[in-house]
Amino acid sequence: MARYPFNVRWWQRSRSWNISYTISGLIVLAIVIVLMFSRYPFGRDEVLTDAPVETGVSQPVTKLAVETEPRLDFSAAAQLPTNQIGPEVAEMITAAVKLIKADPSKVIEVREKLNDALLMPMDEQQRAFIKKQLSQLADRWLFSKTVYPDDKLCDIYKVKPGDQLRIIGERFKVPYEILMQINNISRAEALQAGEAMKVIKGPFHAKVYRSAFTMDLYLQNTYVSSFQVGLGKPGMETPTGLWVVKPSGKLVKPVWADPLTGRTYHPEDPDYPLGSRWIALEGIDGQAKGRTGFAIHGTKNPEQIGMAGSQGCIRLHNGDAILMYNLLMPAFSRVEVVE
Image (tube, rainbow, N blue to C red; front, side):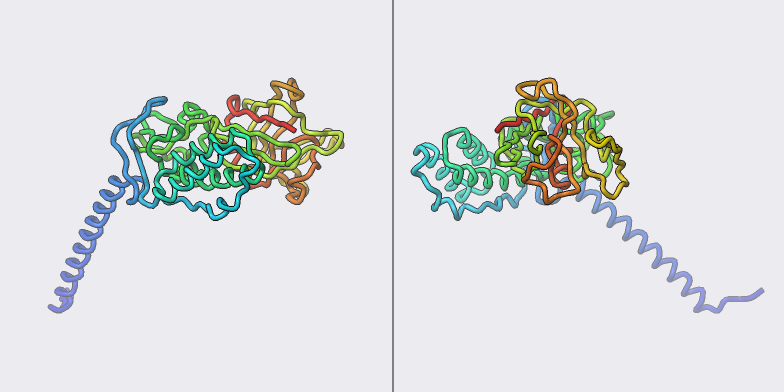
């Protein structure tokens, strides 16, 4: 029988010890990482309460990021005209500017002041300025994982056994896709009981201005952002009035038959016209009442956004169409079209 020299046996024992120490070190490192992330499930710069949040129940401060300063540009505020607006509007804007500069964490209070100001008479330059600031604020309070104190539109929800992301979305009247987006959830099936997640209290609504080719987005009655749209061409104008997102009417690149030519388009066709998403609408009031076949959708012709070139549908850039698909809730979200 062959015998191993002494130095070979010693080397084998040393290698075994090294492997044992390495495995032990990895186990300790894994435990530390688990403890860190269980304490900070949304990242180290955010703190959560342990209290579960039920539907419709307001909780104390839940989560507030350390980096709270919104990227707002108030440099143009001093040059805004005031001769066409009442002093009350000017005072509200001035107060909001001073507040956010003095305390960048006052995002919700500033949002409420500016949103209230939108209801007052003002010139278009003032209105555009306020909308721009509100849109930038929305990047903080809405399209992020942060929940600010006293925000009645967002909250923290603690996942219960048996919860599904789709059901949670329905409970709060928002699509589950936006909950996945703001919580960085890669798969809906990955949701686990005991996890804390940010929820949005919907529904979202939209208002389309035919003369300006714009769509304003609201969460309940709070302004969020504006988008350019394409609308119906002469003779096929987008009907004014009130619409609701049709139940089961949200589709990803559906097969579509052109009512004018009779041709059927499939998603793989190189000239497929509907873009990334289709959000079917049902008319419930005004000229829209009883009308069907209309939708909000993407487009293969982005150069026609801001123009009257569709067969009556509301066109969006494909990225904007995906966002609206993730925000508008069937049977709850309303779309008003005005001149």
